[in-house]
Image 1 (cartoon, rainbow, N blue to C red):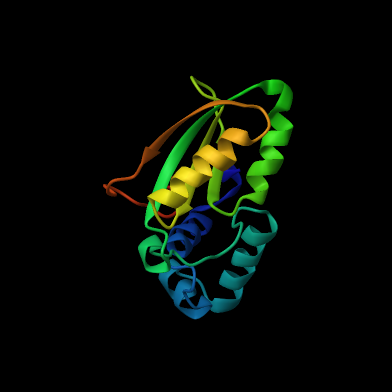
Image 2 (tube, one colour):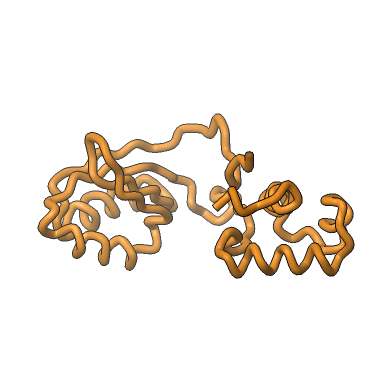
Length: 152
């Protein structure tokens, strides 16, 4: 997809990843366009699905989600669809990825405290359809957090 993007599109993406609420007039000035062509480009990038949406980057501690962790899940592939359906219903699971390698899925979870983490893992996720085993890791501190992706 990036082959269809020119340097101005890339500049727009870099700026919007850093500041999604940047007014179109300011964005246009920073990428060397007038506002109308800049807005057309942004709308085109949205329509093409390059820009999937906009959101706020929230400090999880300030919304009482003090425990963030990752859970590696090994699945019985015969019940994988039931697992996926259960994951979609659980708000504490904020990300889920199907992977290659030594486990089948990686979940990122956010909960209020260790008790909630224990309940989520032992009483919820381990009982999801198809789950054979899980391994969990809690984030102790963040060494790097980056919103967005590098744009070549």
